[in-house]
Length: 197
Image (cartoon, rainbow, N blue to C red; front, side, top):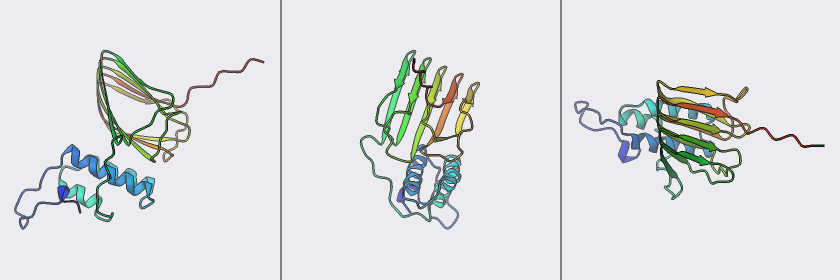
């Protein structure tokens, strides 16, 4: 059990330590590694990641990964990437390398994340949204699945325009964060233009 999320000792009398966003991120990273190595399946990953997002104390987080090998996910330079925009347009399209976690801060603007031709080297990609008065369009490759249960929408809309999206596909995207007075749209690959005869 990692020291940073170990429950506080004190014979049951000391108050439990509250969990931070960084604590939850570490647990989600361990769950991603467990999914990639086959220790848990996608359905169990869904259940545990939902528990991690809703955990309030470090004791609750520790219980989620108590049966997994100890050790945090290795930190690499491209493990987390942050994108920021204010009254502008952000785009990631074509062939680009997808990090383990992508954090998007957007204020009064638009963002387009197109993963259909991107290089995705891990089975689960985390997308954390911090949107205020903006719109986000995410294009997912065929066969991909996405979870939006961790999003807090405040006077906003979340729509999945794909037809019959798989509940547990590959790759899988876990979308969390907050959208205020904005919108999120999930779409599949762009239709290919018809060839002229």
